[in-house]
Length: 429
Image 1 (cartoon, rainbow, N blue to C red):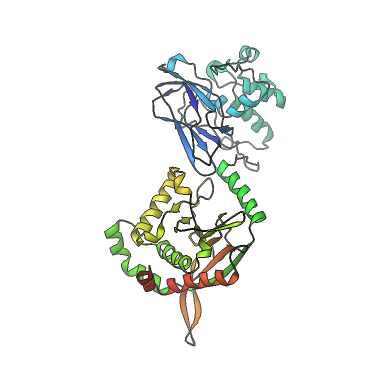
Image 2: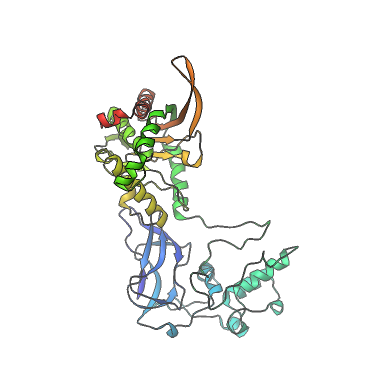
């Protein structure tokens, strides 16, 4: 049974192989996730279509694949003993064995791999370890193999090189060889090189982070980004939140945060200045009829922006529940493509990381993004007197090709007014 790259969404045509959850020779159960694919928007888990044994991994971690490409082969109905499992150490870096011209594999219609290189097997050394030893000029007589039957595996060569290159090697500093009976949970394929004090670490960038870098560069070369700033007195909003927080939690089962207030205030600003809810496509300006608010969420693989669809129809509790659900899906990598598409405006909160002031970058092709920041007690002049108030700097970055400065300043001032007098959010929403 071939493991194929599935359809991943209308706008996604290729992905990067992220992580294999199974090794060659391990049993699989129908519906069990076998491999994770990384796209620029979501991560997709590819399940097994039948019970059996993973016979071959065709595409290794880091490989770029397209829809319907073959990722691997499952021998349907087979038992674990029917396919001999290679050394886990050799599966640590699948990309080397499949991409190196020296690797003697057979590519046929069934995708079955030929196994060990004959001369390497005679030397009781795996093909990957043999190439590494040859490239680095390692004397194999000095290596003690830790693989099955004393076979030398890749980790043995790397450990030897680390000992040779380290002036004061220690047991703690050296990576532990992977034994042949370790499970997937304790011997997962590695995403980074071994690390020793003072040495560099090489980590493969996720497809999402690479795509994000490309798009940020594209935004800088396409849009004319300008930022306007203001500051908001958070006193009344914080007072409402403090008074209603406990009852809100009891009634709706979710915490009352500041983001729901800002989502409501942003919608008020977009209603007053609809051009900031527009989108520029070639020589046409499209005024969006709905208010789909993206909330930027940080993750290990980079920033993602799930979207609250029709946020103008949502209550405070629905907004908070939606944000919590999105954050959980980001954490577990369960976001769907639909949940990331269609945004008309974005909010990002650098304040959760302690940012006092920043300049957000547009989530193109949107023409506006609001940046929230830390709430800091500062002395403010109120009616001729100095008072200590909780203040937040806010920033609006906008595309000056579409939005004029007057409109941008007016929008941000509107958001400020609604947050400083949150009763208006209830009256005007």
